[in-house]
Image 1 (cartoon, each protein chain N blue to C red):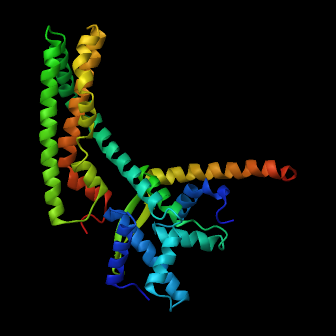
Image 2 (cartoon, each protein chain N blue to C red; image 1 turned 45 degrees about the horizontal axis):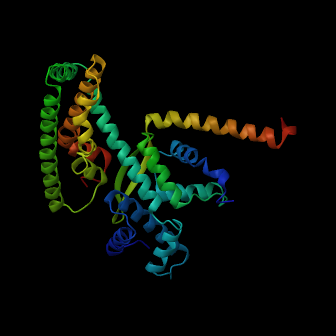
Image 3 (cartoon, one colour; image 1 turned 90 degrees about the horizontal axis):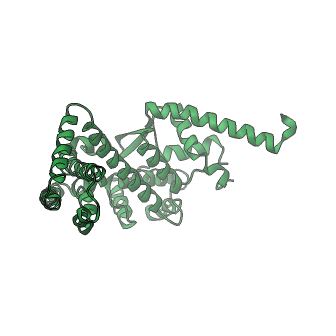
Length: 110
Length: 229
């Protein structure tokens, strides 16, 4: 399931949601957090994560901070004000999507 | 177990070998690889640094760092265009708006005289000569900066080396610019558009070759928190 195309469209929402719950996070931490939360079901690939983060940064949704940690520099991402607002929109969109899909896949439930 | 300094340096070289030229992206990827290697060491303490490094790199997929490089470039170009646009907007607000209008009127009056073709050439030569002069100065300034620090920053390259981009497009239209006054009937609408084009070109060149480079340190520090570290 980890490479499922179904997850791809939600990568941005997942990143925003995680950053909304944590003050600031770095790339590797995000991949590990998702892995832990979904018990390994969903693995964000490195090749997709950084492009997504840089895009969000360019759009002004994320801000960056750099700190020195063990012999090296670490780049942290955090939500900007616009980013926080956008997170709400994205989550609503996703909830709407899930609802629609449920109606389609399992009409009896509704 | 944590990576030591020479291993971190090795990772920087490794990212360079995989076509990551710019320091900010190198730094981010080095930290990622280092974290991955350290995590591997927790479960398999015997795995060598080289093996762990290759294993960490493989997780980036067959294109390696390529997607990250491409997206980073796009993001930086967008940021640069954003700075350009912000500065340009200021010229349509008071007090600069007066300057913009004055500039437009100078072009308009000159082009609506009998000597449209001559004025076109004169303004063109002035703008081009100034742009070439400024580009040369900025390039020299960039080389000096690189003598002090050899770290590469994409935004710095955009500010100092590609600043003349707008004028390059203009140069490529050299022939067209000279023949425009001959080809078109000189109507008021034509004069307004032609003067607007010259006003816009003057402003864009001035902003990209003078205003933004003068704010380079501020913009670089804002973009790269690690710039002054």
